[in-house]
Length: 247
Ligand SMILES: [Zn+2]
Ligand SMILES: [Zn+2]
Image (cartoon, rainbow, N blue to C red):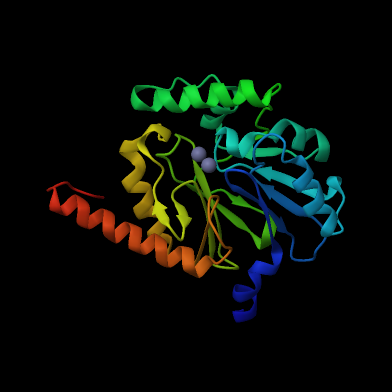
């Protein structure tokens, strides 16, 4: 079991795009993989190459899992679905983001504007439909079992995926983890900010030994876990100094 937990990294292929990272999670028997997010438009070549290096065919991609519907995560979604034939698994609340019809409000309108500009510049085509709606606690069969963890705040249907077998939490955009900055997404990017603290606390309660976000510098789950703990401690201190409650 110790091996299982420590060797998860050999079953993760990092696809590093302009803004963030998407991943191929290789099945334990090496026959097949799931794609976790799809990157920005134009990054298809990287996804293709990563799969080829694994010796896998597009038809061996079993599923496309989405953490949420922002453009840097779903830019290649329609292409990936057509290329692999794999079904898309995401929270139903993310369909409006994928479609570009989400009613962004308040400071979050800026996010909507950026998304519209990005779609126009990048020539994003027809959106893809979610095939299977996922919800908190759902157990997905891939990678030795992945549990859906609903972590709303950044978007209403933002989800992480937890592997008990490897004790890894893929945390989506709950926070970004770079050596020069570890932070929750800036306010303009968050559609349900009132839910953020509860989701941060929920992720921490899982107690995963490894955390892998979708925006980071190096694939080091222990490092991201430590940074996440420091980020939360800082946030709690910051709130306490201002007499604000945290969950
Ligand atoms: Zn995002
Ligand atoms: Zn992102």
